[in-house]
Image 1 (cartoon, one colour):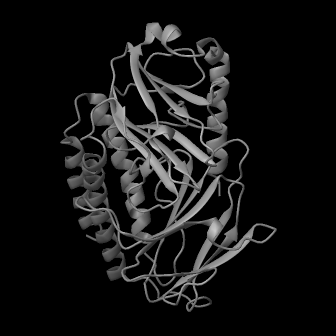
Image 2 (cartoon, one colour):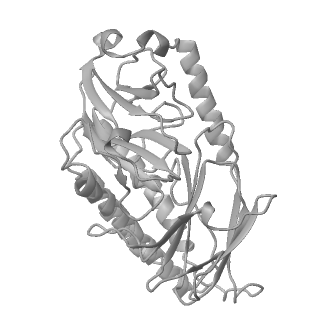
Image 3 (cartoon, helix red, strand yellow):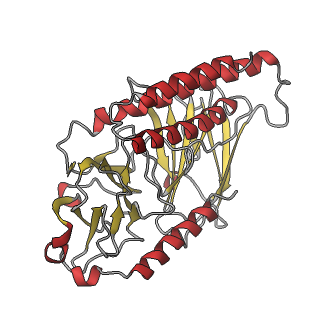
Amino acid sequence: MLTESFAAAIAEAEGIVAGAPHVRTEADRCEGYDYLAGSIRASLQMAWAYQRDFPYFTQSTGPYTKMGLDNPDTLYFHSYLREDAEYVVSGRRGSTADLSFQVLNGDYSPVAVPDSLTAFDDRAFDIADDGTFEIRFGPGQARRNYFTLGPGSAMLIVREVYSDWTREQRGTIRIRRADTTGTAPPPLTQDTLAKRYGVAGKILVNRIRTFLAFPEWFYLKLPVNTMTEPRSTPGGLTTQFSSVGHYDLADDQAMIISVPVSEAPYQGFQLGSMWYVSLDYINHQTSLTAAQARPDPDGRIRYVVSERDPGVANWVERTGHARGYLQIRWQRLTRDLKPSDGPQLEVVPVDLLDRRLPFYDRARITREEYAERIAARQAAVATRMVG
């Protein structure tokens, strides 16, 4: 059967999910099977997008195809490359907080993070007054608007990052290989399709294995309920710093995370599940950008991570996840961050928040106001995912 290899890969991936070491409850397992479904969709999409001669951008990570502690504020696109070919990337810059590009020499695996060969944001090339741009990637010498593909170049990743979900508008982007423009790929054959199903199966199993192993490298060896000092994000996204950690909280506890408001155009905080993916950020406030958060008069943002509703604007909902991951990102930086730019954490009883949270009265929010926040999130995600 044409799909036999992919069916076998699905069964293998299901076994990995069912046997994941963090699974303790039926809810954990159901969440894993939902994660598996998204990974199946994404793996098929990635296998069919493996078109290095006739490339196009695909969105393999999103609200329903999550992986790698995906950022709720980011639209991710990728295309495959050949290191010896020239590619033209063009489009129109939107009004989002950041637009960045990264060339990798492979994909993530359970034993390694791919090398970042090139990483930059849109400050590195020319954008016309009307927002349009055209840049090239190829084997030639680097120059303005031309970026060299080093040995092993295999994938181009584009990240478009929102700070204000309701006001900022996404741009457009496309890719073509310069020497195949105006021609067509060969017709499909059964052999080609069989290979694609085989590739999809390998992508699926590798994806599940990788992002169950990934947190061990960067998160789980840290003391629980702490976060690191800001550091350049592993993987080579040169204009991004991050602070990471993992939490374990009882339902009557809250974690107060205090961090200065940064001058960076993008600063965002999120929670992640033990499957190493974002929590539901559409229907719950499980993430906040600096633009969405309510800062305190002393220039700091204080997030309150808890299961119980504390009645404050910067509540970050656990949504039943007693354990999980914490991450703050800063992007489009013009300087390296210092320890003083990073977060301070305190775990307190939820019932004592009014005594332990500075500016508590100013932080209060009504249930109706909170519902308006959720409605705005739902509308903003629906809008940005169209197209």
